[in-house]
Image 1 (cartoon, one colour):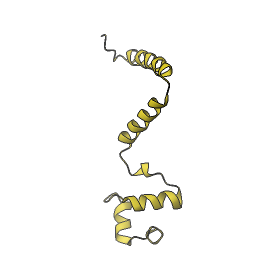
Image 2 (image 1 turned 180 degrees about the horizontal axis):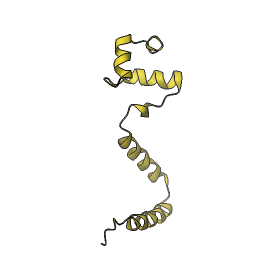
Image 3 (image 1 turned 180 degrees about the vertical axis):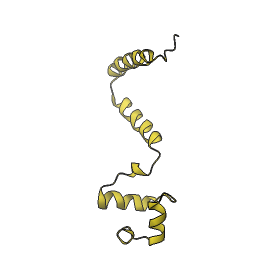
Length: 84
């Protein structure tokens, strides 16, 4: 695998064991050659927040208003309502 990624075996071992993170070039190779998403190495919570914002902004204003009402009800349902 180290050869396919064009890195030395020690570096590959550190990445595999979690002692190091791959750089952008390695992540690109993992994606283009093997189909592995860069998300396996990235801070997933930060990424998903960004993607959620992109999706939210893609909705029309009417849909956002409807969704906001549903989300507020859901928050109240789990006991985290602002009015309490």
